[in-house]
Amino acid sequence: MAHLVDKLAVVTGATGGVGSKICEELVKHGLRVAGLGRRQHKLDALTAKLGDKFLAIKCDLSQEDEILSSFQLIDEKCGGVHTMINCAGVLFSNAILESKTEDLRNTLDINVLAPAICTREAVKSMRKYNIKGHIINMNSAAGHNAEVIKAPVGLYCASKYAVTGMTASLKNELFNTGIKITSISPTGIATDMIRRAGVPDNLIPHIAILYPQDVADAVIYSLRQPDHVLVSIQHYNVSHATLDPITRELALVRCTRMQVHQQLATTRTNQLDRKKATRRTFEAIDPASLAPVDIRRIQYLICIYYTSVGCSGQFQRIRVIKAI
Image (cartoon, rainbow, N blue to C red; front, top):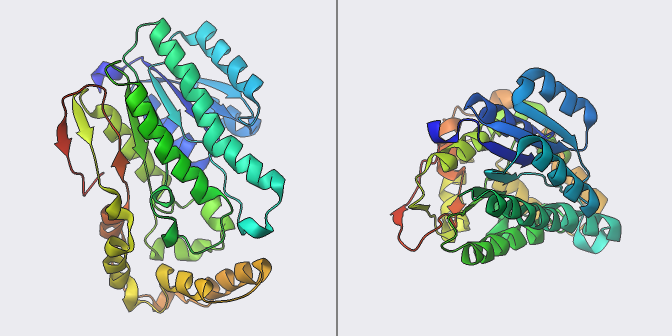
């Protein structure tokens, strides 16, 4: 990645598990990073760890004025943006019908409006400095097939569908500008978000789940691709047709993720009971009873889905199965 050394990347959600790992990998590969996040103590920790290659910016992405002032500061201190990584995201573990309006609005503000505004400002910077840059939207498998998400997640799936559509629209808008647009759609990631959904720490190593490092590796993979390359995986790869055979490999254990989803889908209970049911189901599993499976191999099969990469009319198409 010599062509990216000393180039500037802006990362939102820098204080989260995935965002912080992405910042670390970018600096490791020679980029300068401006990290936006809400938690000052975590920004301070990243600054101490990454040194002068990292610019910490405290920013509430639900407030447009804070986003705009952040990009003004970036322009003054760092110059033009080469890479924009929209990584910030929120998930509220509530059914839509039982959610507070504040939570619904916050999901859309952080997961949809913030990346749209950040992308707009980043592209302004790229055009100002004549940079052939790269926009990376952190999407989700839930942004391609909401039916596989049986647990209550509010407007999370809807917000990720919006990211899918936004990325496709931006691809058209950025056609022949020299600016690339990428959507990365991981499955579940071992972060605080998955823990809040009811998965205990002692079971995370035993289920098909990703880690922040996997997603950071996917970002680096995307940035390494030449300008003419389109990395494309069809959406059916995140459907039951693909997930079911993989979860069947996990059927040797007493309970799989899909079985938990099926149980919750057929249980007519209120929201609180559904959350308790999720936790009880996972807590009932004895990790010692789980059959040995090659979790890393399964992760590779379902881990990352790329869509909408490219900046010109001619592409070499690559179908990525083992993404990282």
